[in-house]
Image 1 (spheres, rainbow, N blue to C red):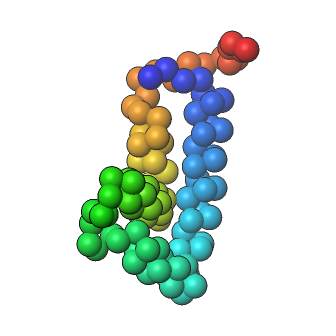
Image 2 (image 1 turned 90 degrees about the horizontal axis):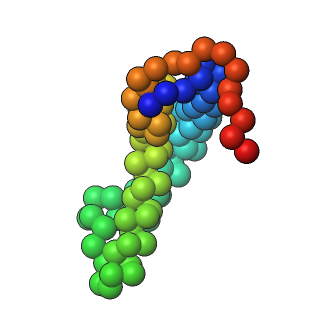
Image 3 (image 1 turned 180 degrees about the vertical axis):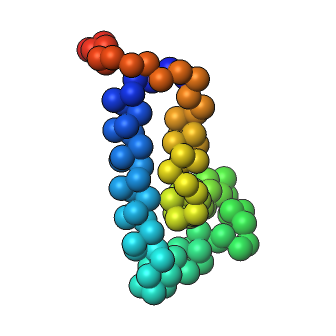
Length: 100
C-alpha cells in the first residue's frame, strides 16, 4: 500500500486519539463495569450461536464490538494502523493527489 506522509500522519494521529479515548473509558472502573455487561450481552463466553440464523448474526455483530474494544485498549497505534489499513509498502513525499 502506498500512502502520502500527510495522510499517514493524519491517520496515525486519529488512531492515537481514538486509542486514548478507548483506554480512558475502558480502563476505568465504570468502563470495566460496562465491558462486563457487554461481554454478557454479546454471549462472549458462550459463543455466538443463536436459535436462528438472524440471532446468530446479531450475536456475531455484538462480538465485533467487543473485539474493537479489545483492539483499541490492547494493540499499539502501529498495530491498529496495520489492522485497519494494511502494511505500508511506500510513503510518498509531496502533495496529496485530489482524485475528487
